[in-house]
Amino acid sequence: MDIQRITMTGGMAPVFIFSVDTDLERTLAPLTPAERAVARGLLEGLSNHEIARRRGTSLRTVANQVRALFQRFAVASRSELVRALDGLPPVEV
Amino acid sequence: MSCTLDIVEAAFRLERDDEAWLAGLREAVECAFPAARTVQTYVSDTAHPCQAIAAWLAETYPAQATGATPDAAECRARSVLLSDLLDDDAFGALSPALEAEGLGEYLLVVASDGDATTLLAIGVADASQIGSSRRASFARVAEEMQSAMAVRKRMRRNSMPEAMESTGALPAVGDAAEDDPEAEARRAWRRRLFRRGRAATGGSEVPTLTWEALMAGQFIVLDQVDRAGSRKLAVRPQPPGESLRSLDEREQLVAAMAGDAVSNKCIALELGMSEGGVARTVDQLLAKLGLCNRADLVRLRSALTRISA
Image (cartoon, rainbow over all chains, first blue to last red; front, side):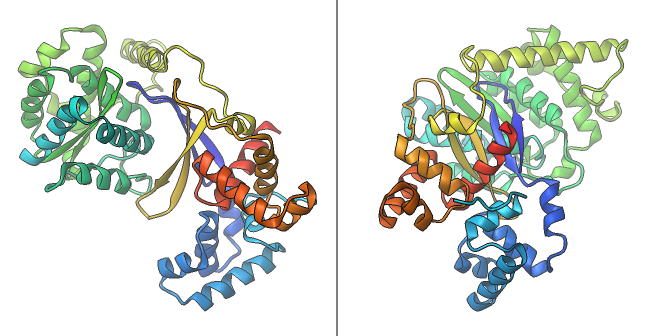
């Protein structure tokens, strides 16, 4: 993720905006369009239900796509996937 | 036209009467204004002023996708210019000027901080109404402002004469040549903006955004939804005087591990807690930080640790 600092005028404190950077686009490039959309949903922390509703697909489809993403990125959880999409390796405890 | 006037007047009236409503508006505006640097189309709405503003704020962030948006400096220029005009009867002075501009329906977004009321942005229903000539006239008035304290009077009478409509496109703010007096004037004006910004934060240094500062409650996280319906995170320094919601030691440990995408089970094993205890702690710390879910925590953690690394 990129962090932009935006200094506001007229009585406002600066605001830091976290936005999707170009690295993510590269990370997502090899995915199918459907997987990309699901991956973005996961980055936002959406549940499978919410992703299914947003995409107008069935819950089962989303679950399958999420599992495919887990396999692709070799991760075991949604959090790890978010981390992987940000280009970081899993943390060993 | 009349309904948008109502919105602004409501903001003024409520500033005196209804602190909570205004606080909500202020938060919404603070949340949306970073977006406004790229948003040109501000839709005016009817019926319920507060709802209209809130809906508009939620909707117009951010509009990077749309083509010809003004750059950040230009948008700020406009905001600050108008903010200087807005006090007491200044709105009365402003509205004929806007009418003279032929903007038709418009929306003004006002934020109030303490006793300083600021007009953050001006919106029109149709983006095509702000063509290059219109932008040029805005920019011209902005340049006038830097030297003239009497701009208010000028604005009241003939601030945006038709003659300005014929001037060309808006000159880029900030990338002009050294020897250009206009550029020097613009730089001076931008320095002034900067001073305003510092004064507004009470002269105190803004804390550096680090993971530790976040843990210490020096920042709050604002949730933003853009036009496409995607969520984004914005982090704002905790306003001075507001109580800090720092995380206790245990919460900090859990936050760091959960932020590293470690599962609750592993955290529980590592810290000698129960899995349910970890889940409760995570819920607490997310609430304290203003986050909605773990994914936000992981993203913040990875972004911040990468920066400090």
